[in-house]
Length: 386
Ligand SMILES: *Cc1c(COP(=O)(O)O)cnc(C)c1O
Image 1: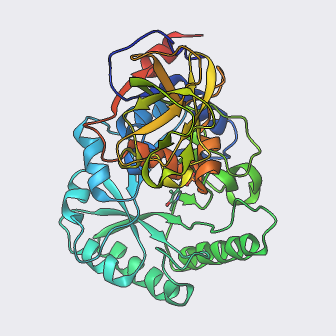
Image 2: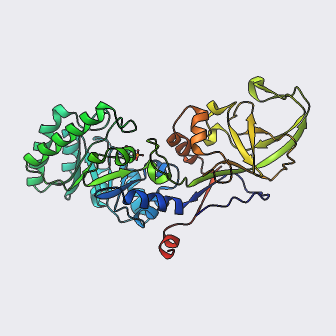
Image 3: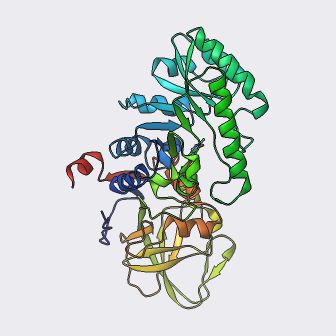
């Protein structure tokens, strides 16, 4: 659906509106492209869109599994009644609550023998995904340790302590499909899978691809794809047409007429080149709008683009309203799908010298008290629609 942003006056504060029908459409797009299952990745509060809402919407539209970074995130999803399979992949061997993960039926990704031993020590039979580093030098098991990890996992499995249900890897350069490192990563993963099977393991959930690889490297899809960015409309491979679910709005809180030569904000980076009207908005870098966007960013007010002038402050920014007649209470669209001419998350990423992921997760993080979140659309509505 196309979301209509009312240009009318509003007295509400900053608001993130999440169009769950856009998440639903993106999920269906990817569900039609994976060769096996779609695992919806909802880490970092669903990339700032609300983990539970994104998870439920994805599950109602073709996703069959969920993926998160931490056991805490997985427990939060269980806490709101989400019963679908969940895997958590960044778990500290010494500190993670593996027992609760096992008790709550959360799959645990294991990158080392140390982790494996901690998981094996729990009561019950842990569901494990062995995690191989396929070219990131980050959170998977180094290939040199993989044979030992598989053998130890098989011993634990024979002892009834764990069940190895999956093998996972992650590609570091999938946004650039031609990169040789993707071929190396894929070859490593296939070797790792062989080693696991030759060790006597029978992993049925085999997952390497995330959003970009699913779109551009079909050979990496195996039995499941982990899709995070794509569900919230982000595709760095620029090969898909997705919908952006998040719209950020805030009201103009004051307007003032200023004379030519008036300097605005810290450092006086912008000086009015003519007499004009300035509008003040109560959002800043503490709300996730990067300070590095200063001097470049724009917003939409009453259907027209206006420049943000002067530096982005911690809690506020100033717009050059010229003679548009915009008034206190008018709604400022900071970003959205772009259908009405408002800036997109992609534009904000460009202005800020970063990627779209950083814009949406920052705006969605730790600002619950200042940027309210509301949703439109969603699973029930989707299932009742044609
Ligand atoms: C974040 C993450 C994903 C999701 O990647 P997207 O590109 O956002 O789809 C998949 N796998 C791992 C290991 C991740 O950390």
